[in-house]
Length: 447
Picture 1 (cartoon, rainbow, N blue to C red):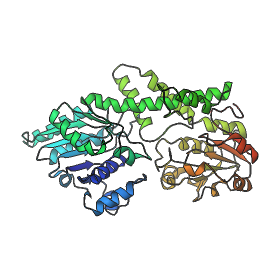
Picture 2 (tube, one colour):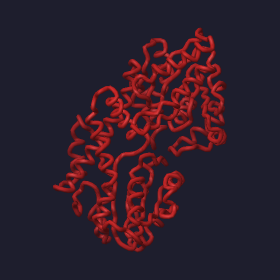
Picture 3 (tube, rainbow, N blue to C red):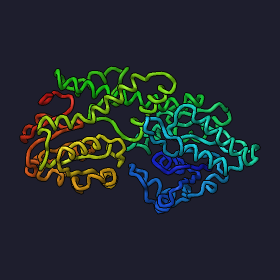
Picture 4 (cartoon, rainbow, N blue to C red):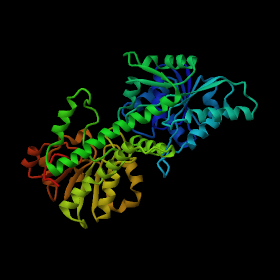
């Protein structure tokens, strides 16, 4: 059993802290937001993530997971302190590290015993060294240079919607440290999570920091590449689903992240792609592939809007569009960089009325689309969204959208038009019910 402090109770901090607690460790989660901490003490979570609420409730009840606003209480007697605060993008695309540095400063001001400080947040190369310098300076100012510490890079690789499973059974654990003793302690911490023999990789801190960016940009590149091929298919012919099957059979390529759609979003891919571009720029290197990945993705978010414009024209006054899915992906309520932001705002600006349903993201969407409140109606049932609709737009591929009752939809809709942003449906099945069907990269109704 180890005592662990998590600084930050957002997506990464809460999942990480709850999972560590579930393995028998004593975990204190610290956040400056008093309302959030009060809610967490009552197992009221700020995010939706499958399995997380049950994990928090169980470990709260059994006394292994605790929440506080006092960082001094959190690190008292702790061996490890994880920094899991946000690193949102600045206007130039670079990561805002102010929360990281504030956390490091607070840790340095409070610690009075040996502590391993772990940067778990996604941070640019060199940040771990800066965190070390900040803590060292705080100890020097208060004449506590004798207090020992080490700083480790331990990037997270969690997929929203499957974060608990990813943490409990990681593909790999990356640990950046030059200290052999610290590396052994980190291995001991993660040993219960790698019983299936997946590797714990020890490397230098800069390599660990870069590994996270390289992994996310590589995955984003696969998505953008497939979306670009899909657009070409709509022009010259071909079916992206057949193409995906054909290239996925090549063991050098594999099956993951090869689905064409309305573009990627969320808190990781967009931010990390832009940060890598910015890091290259600051160091005199044009990151041409990462730049193209970003540009293709931004273009893809407008692709469904272009289809709708081609079908209905530039002015959509008096028209009603049902929307299925607002979150950037299923199994989450995260709206950050979601394709729905571009699609919904564009249609409203063209005069449309939106009736939207999402199983988890409606509360978040109401805040994001606050300025468009007069033009959006949120409903609690997917079929309500299609009532009197001139078209249905599928944006997020929640499972419950995969086999809808097309007969019921037909009786409810004003016009039988369906824009499928995730290629969920079969042409022949749709046509049997009389729907006009538009999808991505399957050359159906063309471009």
